[in-house]
Image (tube, rainbow, N blue to C red; front, side):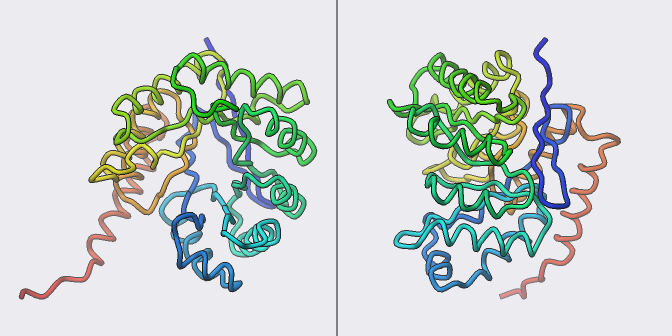
Amino acid sequence: MTEVMTTTVESASKKVSISRKLPTAIIGERINPTGRKTLQQELKAGNFDTVKSDALAQIEAGAVILDVNAGVPGADEPALLVQMIEVLTELTDVPLCIDTANVKALEAALKVYSGKALVNSVNGEEEKLETVLPLIKQYNAAVIGLAMDDDGIPKTLEKRIEIAGKIIDRATKLGIATEDIVIDPLAMSVGADDQAGKMALDAVEAIVKKFGVNITMGCSNISFGIPDRELLNGTFLAMAIRCGLTCPITNPLFDEVVTSILAADLAMGRDEFATNWIGGYRKRQAAEKNKPVSEPS
């Protein structure tokens, strides 16, 4: 039987543990300017109001880690990412997931972050393995490994497993603990490929069985281009949790998503006395009661 691993991520004063023995750890995806023109303009102007409001709203909705991305076209990404991290660490004690493909930005962020960050991400490309993994070791971070390499996103399950193994092997050879490696098997849109969901679920199950590591995915990807996205995202999340997903990167502001995660945790025996489920129910009831009543037309 594969060992159940625990990955820890920390702020200066708070630790979050990720494990298949514990409730699912939601990583909030909202602090990301990709495709958000208003947020991009705000960040260029040094305005962090939306970053703050997104952070607090996601925490209230159930996120226990916040993904932070500063990829604004034309901006100084290292400087902006550092600013965003400083703003967020003053605002909340929730640990951060540093999301960047820019190695200079990553190092700058790790230098100022107080705690043990989760880094999003490395992959199987040689250049990434050689530049990102030493920083993970140097700053005692945890890292997400994407199951893709120089040839792009693999079309076969076997290749995704192979790349996951390569990342784990290279990381552990540098002295990074296996528990500090979280693999992302990659969820792609079922709108483009109706087998993409099954491929992702099979990959989660196979990678957990072979390596025992914790698993993340950008779960909103599964529904891109499909109607009723939140329903599909929630259903996929519940299935992925059953397969071994432990810390999805998703939008907790959608009730369907959070409710599906709470239901999966309860059904999997990870919610003692149904405490989280009942808490979620009460929160939904309160929100329903506080909804403004629309006047009849």
